[in-house]
Amino acid sequence: MVAYTGIQGQNILIVSSDPSDPTEGQIWYNSTSNLLKGYQFANVNAWASGGNMGTGRRQVTGTGTQTAALGFGGISSPGPGPSLANTEKYDGTSWTSTGALNTARNGMGGAGTQTASLGYGGFIVAAPVTYQTITESFNGSTWTSLPANMSTARYQMGSAGTQTSALGFGGDAPPRTTATEEYDGTSWTAGGSLNTARINPTGFGTQTAAIGAGGYQPGTLNNVESYNGTSWTAVNTLGTARYGAGSAGTQTAGLVFGGSVYPGVTRQTATELWNGTSWTSNPTGLGTARYSMGGAGTQTAGLAFGGGAATAPTSATEEWTGQALATRTITTS
Image (tube, rainbow, N blue to C red; front, top):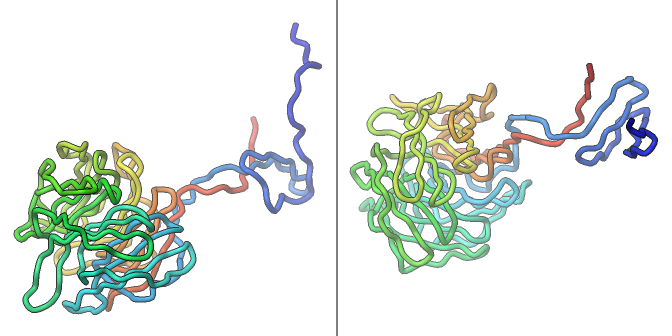
């Protein structure tokens, strides 16, 4: 027979109101509501407004996390240009200006963190218009032009990875390309080609475990491909076909948001979550419909900023919360 008197545990706190600062896993009994409660992770899956960028822009590149993001380059006018060199940092509340790109451009690939980013390729809106192979690195305060250029000049490509292990794929070369390139911290080399050439796909993950989603070629695509460091494989498609979407996350836990649908420019708010196998449409989307925005963060803590909104490039920033600690009622039966 079990000696129950020898079993020890923690007493459940009895309170008249919920604690103002509970810790994860804490359980208590609320004597006022007569409910047993706990503090645990819950699915929120919603966007909320963050601090506006100093310069509204589209075709902006984003790297980093929700509370330590970097936005660089782009175009601030509704029309064709000019390209921007402006760079801004986000601290989870507000944006501040930091060191400018050495070469102003838009539609770049980007990889890394707020203090160790890489910007590559892109497009210079000038006379004449020029597609770029330029690569620059950011150390948290300044950009440095690197000797290693991409093999294929392009803009509006998909990108993923880190400052020393980056990936660039697809984009307009022109024409639209399937070419993939990998950066090892010193030089760019050819990777496996996409199955479908496309401009304006969105990418997330790492150099050896990436996702490329959507794009345009011609017509709006819902095609999604997965990269293993050697080759691309078609996987389940997006629920909403789109190009110029923002994204965040990893190959097995991703987030895609916004974008546009052809014909014309039909800006989207749609948000979808990727679990490594399939996509789930979120009931609520971005507060501001937009495309060609910056994206950063993870599936549980994402960031969307800038982009082409209805009448002009926007400075609006939105923060995504996938899961968050919350007070939950515990039911027993």
